[in-house]
Image 1 (tube, rainbow, N blue to C red):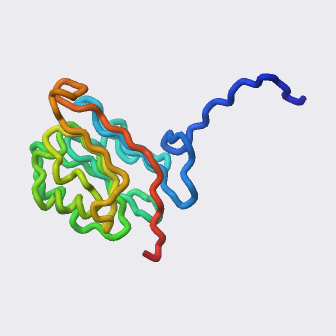
Image 2: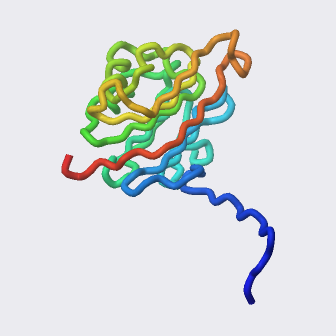
Image 3: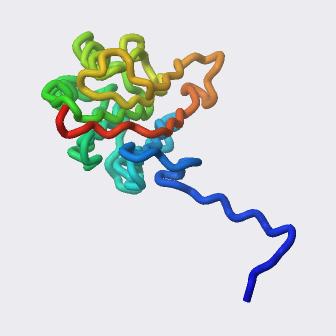
Length: 189
């Protein structure tokens, strides 16, 4: 029953975890995240083929959508949305202040990530590895993965300014997509 064909049809492109185009190396976590589009389509955060946050899971909201993940096991610790337009920034601070070394922080904006952001919030995100948190503004799009102790150097961050000259939607910039492979923390560190 030898299957001989010439030329053979191309095999269907295999999709890897979270729809990545190629598999991650050993001891890495595959992720893909999308910021919200305007105030219409909610953000998504996928890790190791598990959807951590999405409209379908009904756990996203206007503002910053944040998933905390154990950097060794890749298990979700907690996922919450923080309203940065009308909410209380202290709720966000209580969530990110006590993070432990090795906790991964996935952040996807939806609608407005910044109105309620204060100096301390921006500084804390900087300590988690963000370069853009200090200049985030009203209705910017932002996706970011950081960890305690990364200090302004996360390779996983994208930011697009809300500007009426470049906005894709009326009043909002385009949604951002980011994917990649995050090295697992070794449990010793």
